[in-house]
Image (cartoon, rainbow over all chains, first blue to last red; front, side, top):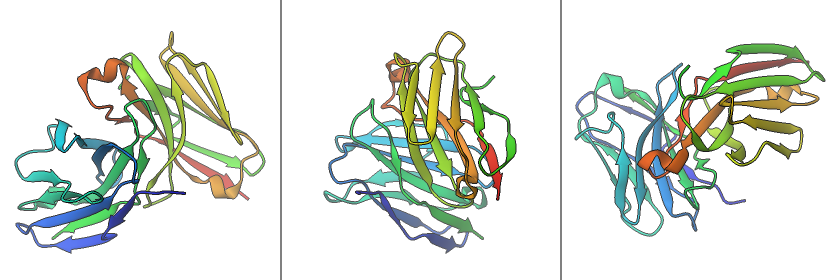
Length: 113
Length: 115
């Protein structure tokens, strides 16, 4: 069964460093999302991406964040200058349609020291 | 209540018993989805119910939706120790709230099934 994959599974970085989190969505899906979950808290929406552009972003998704679909398969989230409060689990999700279910990857645990 | 709020926060049952978790929301929805998350792991999509549906089944899962009460329930029948996880409801707003269908999650119900 097709699934969303994410790499790395765990990333440790120093405050102020740039990180790139990578995702490979399900191949025939058209809608892509990033969410994050700070330990013990709700899953929060960051950004949605469709037709090679951002469709919507939350207040969390400030100028430090960017997304890209550099080729036909990868979908990346970049944090330019990480802060301690960026430490969280980051989930990528994809969907075949707006009315369909979203399928999540296993997540990348980002630890900012 | 917030958009997507589960009840109870924690539930502990014996293997073989049924587990019922509830979700309430504030704003009209397009659909509601239930997810499972094992500790520290990813989110597994369980079931999606659309706003014009009242009940859906998938294996041992039964989901109901009452749009007049803005609530949903997830029933797991004949629970197993492997069902131990956190369960989240997530809503997609009606007309997608002008969005591309992003999900609004609740805080989840932590289910513990004892063997």
